[in-house]
Structures are given as C-alpha cells and as structure tokens.
Length: 96
Image (cartoon, rainbow, N blue to C red; front, side, top):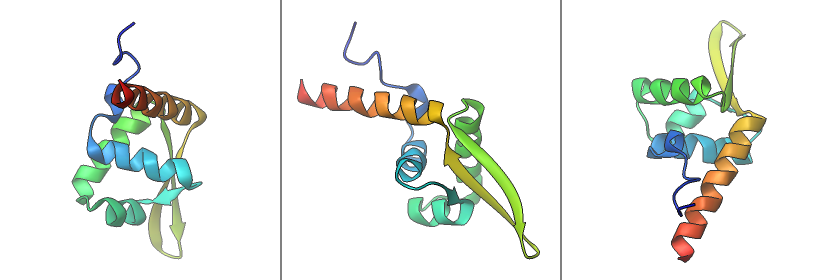
C-alpha cells in the first residue's frame, strides 16, 4: 500500500476541502456562510457542493426562512469518515 492510497480525490480541490472542514466542526452551514468563509462565487460553490452531495458526503436541506429560500448543508456519517481518513492520510504523508 502506498502513502497516497487513502488520499481521496473528492477532497483534492481547496473549496471541497474547505466545505468539509467547516462541516466537520459545525452541525451545518448554509450557502451564504460557506460562500463568505471560503470566498467562493455562487457557481463555484454550487458545483463543489453538488460534487460532494453526489458522493453522499454531504446532505442538502432546502427550506424557506420567511419568504427567502435557504439551503443548508451537513456532513453525512460517510462524509465524516471519508474526510477523517483523508486527513489522516495527509498527516502520514507529511510525517514521512
């Protein structure tokens, strides 16, 4: 087994890495919060959240707050496990 076997391609973009990092320490984050924290554009953030949702790493909830639509995200158990494995692999690689 090589040092990079557990490095997950789904997290190789800085926006996806950022989304998962935020969702690992918060129960959820809405679109606006992620956009502001990551300095991402609407389209960029939308495409990266879709990619993570497709892998079943994040859960998306759409709701209305008053008359405004609100989209919030949370990490799934699968996503948390995959991200933890990814971070551990990166740490092992750094230590080598």
